[in-house]
Length: 182
Image (tube, rainbow, N blue to C red; front, side, top):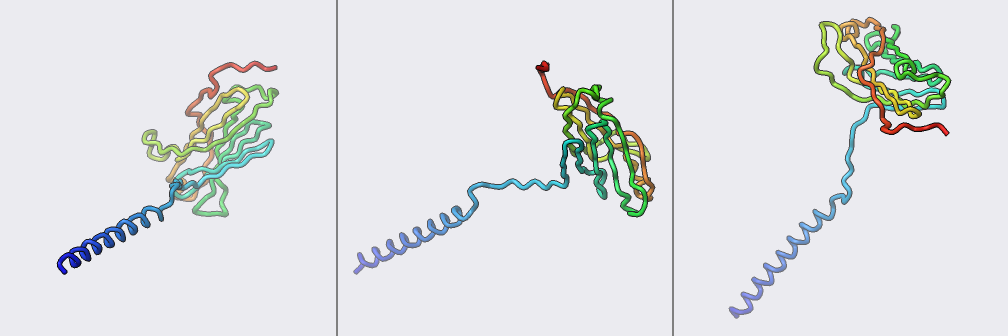
């Protein structure tokens, strides 16, 4: 009798352990096998044969629309007036062909990208660089230029439109070897 009671206890422990292992396995197997990294993106870009457009942060309340005309090299940033939608937008301009020193007859192949940048320095009482840097790359030469936007928060908070030049803040070449034309 004593032997059957011990056997029953051991069988109970074994059954309990087996149930515990099954529960743990069920929890582990119910997790997704491939973790998906979600990156919140609040920017977009598109292009045609003759123009590219992209959006990027200007400040915490507005995005800028960046347009690049491939025929002229004109780069523009439009920022809607968040205080008065009927008012004129803020507009900033540059010429990428001139800044990249490209011969307009060479048929450059442009790419337009917008990156986020939270500049720590460079603030004055009224102006600081906006939260984006817009990059223009000529894939024919490999040269690129990055522009900053001279954003004035106090004017934006009053609803006053702004205008000015996009400021080249970085330049370089993405190509390490010279490519000869055929």
